[in-house]
Length: 206
Ligand code: AMP
Image (cartoon, rainbow, N blue to C red; front, side):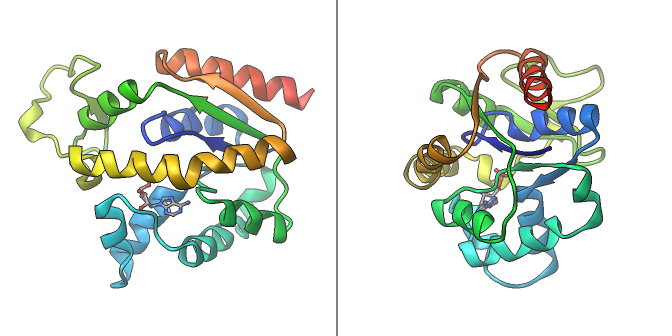
């Protein structure tokens, strides 16, 4: 099955997709990871857009995602996490005849999103992600040794949410007309959200 994982920044798209990919043996394609890898690899302006909380140009991300979708592992099914984020990107998938079986929409309150994003910290040694506002740090892990994504700083979070409301939210109206959309309440704990998404996928596979 091919799935689009949809929702605002901080909805938990990445974490939920990782669990679902593991459970169903699908490929997890995270647009944000593709953009971060591209920013490291090349010296184009990709990183500047990201740091400001803006979307990278459609043309750039479309080419990168299409290349990824051509990889053989995608044949077993994939989860698109963070793509499409504009109507043009959604239409691009349709033009390229990329079939989507179900769109999972993670629905979460803006207040919760801000708390999750501003508290998100990474252990630079292991890549593990913690949240200093919503969880207790494991023993031996100190807040001062953790790093924050440059786009999780408060002023950039605000910009990302603005971009989501203006450019990405309208994609849902488009999808509701053309695809099967399943709304999942993503305000609760991660394992609860994963359970609901997993049930929706099983239901769709029947
Ligand atoms: P994420 O890790 O999904 O929050 O993405 C991080 C950043 O990568 C975003 O704020 C954008 O700058 C860029 N990005 C990710 N996905 C897309 C997309 N589909 N279209 C344009 N820019 C994107």
